[in-house]
Image 1 (cartoon, rainbow, N blue to C red):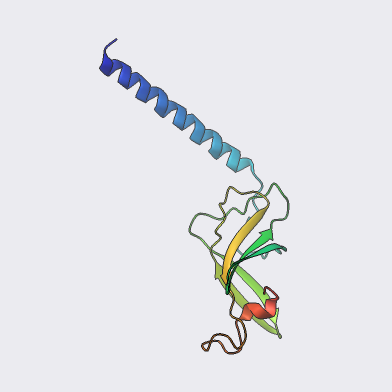
Image 2: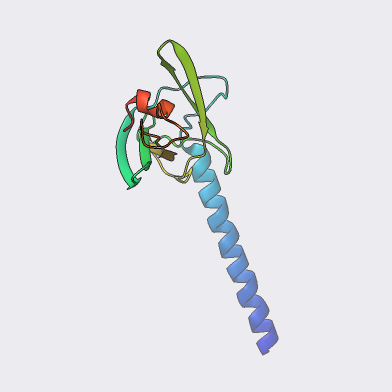
Length: 133
């Protein structure tokens, strides 16, 4: 066997192995229960952890309905979080920072504006009312 034939054989075997791994991951992912089944449905997600990133930025971890669930959101898409604050509906869009392959939770990075700290937001941000600080 020549060096060229050996090289071609190695490339074909490597490409086949990569294809099989990709297909296996894809089929495994399809079998995971997905939380976001319908874009028009609201899904309650409990806040299970918060971590301070900086003085005004926090990472919030929200639990999915079951530990084996994945969020089911395509890369680059966002989710809407909504809450009633003082009788008004407040809605914010966030892009998750956790991978969609992670099971059981979703992570969001949120900037929190505190009252009387930032002159642009003297009353603070809406999230202060959500109890996220």
